Image (cartoon, rainbow, N blue to C red):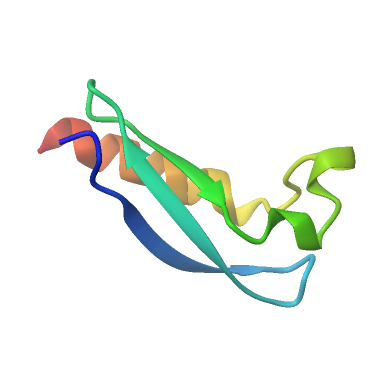
Amino acid sequence: MRDIKYASVRYCPHLGHNVIMEGRPSKTGAVSWECLNKEDCGYREKGCRNMLIPAVRDQTISAGKEA
């Protein structure tokens, strides 16, 4: 079931509005998240500066391993 995608809306303080996050599960059950709005904030130059995103990713990965 690697083709299943998860979508989530999260607030980005750098952009001042919500962004869409897309998650893809790996074979181990972990989920890697990608911001679909990363072209709007200088992601290529500085990377993701939204400190809310790693917390969400870590919680999701932990929940996936428990299930």
